Figure (cartoon, rainbow, N blue to C red):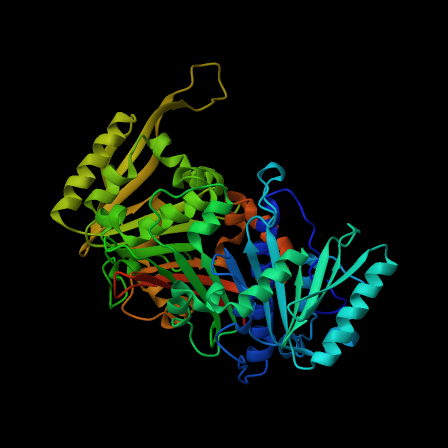
Length: 564
């Protein structure tokens, strides 16, 4: 890490696939964290417009068509850091990368332009199977003063020589290449000034390929049909952009997807009055992908979700979920990262993966199959408890009645009793576990026996909806405080206002309410919070929604709502 500023790559050549993952995650997190922290101080505290120089990375000409991933920040970091009064950007950077021998203000700031691009350009530089994968990494820094940046690169390598490096200079197609092939504590490094960009790589071969990509236009990413289609979806004044070649990302993971639905993805980050809006599009060439049903009004089932819900998911027609483009995307994504969706759920949330086994149910056959109308699902974190209360609301239909009967039968096989009782003047059905208990007495006489009923679930009909909850207390809140629903929550309304309509429903995560619960359920969050603590401290909520109007792409938005 440069002192007080922008990153310079320290690229160790490691015989491990993990190096790509670390590079990608660090790059994405860095750009995201910079954008969010910058937004908070630049836009909220000082309501002015921060305009990116372009919505398309100019450094794409250096990147191959077959590169797995490219991530670009399309603004000068100083625009964001200038108003970082609490030094949160510096804190993020110090957590992400170690410091180097370079002073940012003196050596980088005078010439740095409005683009920083990071890319994994090649999965295996030397193509020698016996030494494993050797990914090629490239960083391109836009320069406004080529002479100053040339002085910087020469200064950088001279300092590396003093630190024990072995400097190699060569000319390749009219470009001077500098490299250091001695593995110092700073790792291997190669650099060159090409036009308006200063390039750094983990191997001089990566620089040669970058130059070839510029001179032979058919080789670079800008001439890829997939990329050209993708960048058309990037909105103006995007702060950052990422492009992924999905089958090649899977190949890097050691996987060959038998039938990949989506072949590429583009993500853009843009400032929004509520926070930071990430817009993403997935592209496919298959004609068998059918868009999920779009909903113009907000799902009515949400009016029965309590305002204090930490997580809420809403949409329509779970019965067709297996064939929807969302399900196909989920299967491809989890297969790429974890091998299968079952493995993904087991690793991300063991408690969620345990539900079908513990209840002896098949979610697809026993629940999803009869949900053809609107639905809403919510988790409500409870103080000092490791588990959360849950709510499931589904629009009534003849299929729902048959589905409830099936669930009652499953409950009976688990030894639960189906009882009818009155709650808040409403007739409800409860799945209860009955057990005999004895109360201690002060005498030596045998303690009297009593029957104790432990509620495992409860449901009732309200309006045109069937409401299921994990306990009586949660259902009572819904029955007695309908005006205190998620639909009346100002933060929820502000979040969904930023999402285009019609759409296919929402996933809404209230970070402030669910943080402790999620940290217990998803240990990986602890690592993320260490890397970008300021971001998580500012985050209020996360809202995700998808929307599609054709069979060629799936579009989705993610809104990071920040505390103001």
